[in-house]
Image (tube, rainbow, N blue to C red; front, top):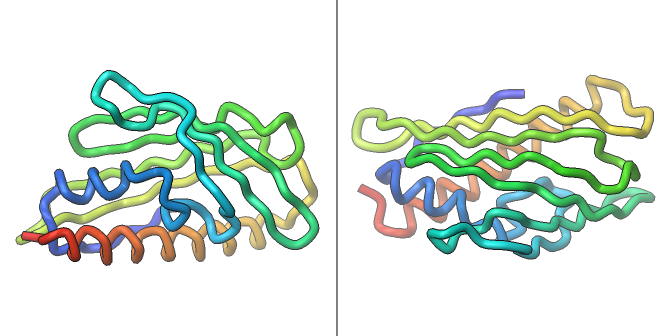
Amino acid sequence: MKESISIAAPVSTVVGVVSDLENPDRWANEAKAAEVQAHDADGRPSSIKVTLGAVGFRTTATYEVAYTDSSVTLTCSGDGGRLIRSSVITYEAAESGEGTELTMTSTMEVTVPVPEWGLERAMTRSARKNLESVRKDAEGAGGS
């Protein structure tokens, strides 16, 4: 799944907003909480525990976080096999006109039987929500 959005703010501001991983708006619609477990040498979250809950399930997954100047990548290191087999979320920011084009790419394999179209639809909805939240917060931070 891949979604993009144009944001009227510089790349550094956008990446800073994406890096605010304790904000549940940065996560799926089903995110109930996000708690940083460790920070990198620059003080950014490097490991984060996310509690997810929806119709009939609740799980906690740990994500390891990697950064570049223009991207943030989150790799799920597991939820004990309860729901998530694997998950990788990448945000890539690139200068575009007077702002930034932010692209979110996400893959997920689950351990429960879910039709592929249903998982894709849920992931697309969550991605759009996440990207809109980043745009609102980045543009509100002063933009370009």
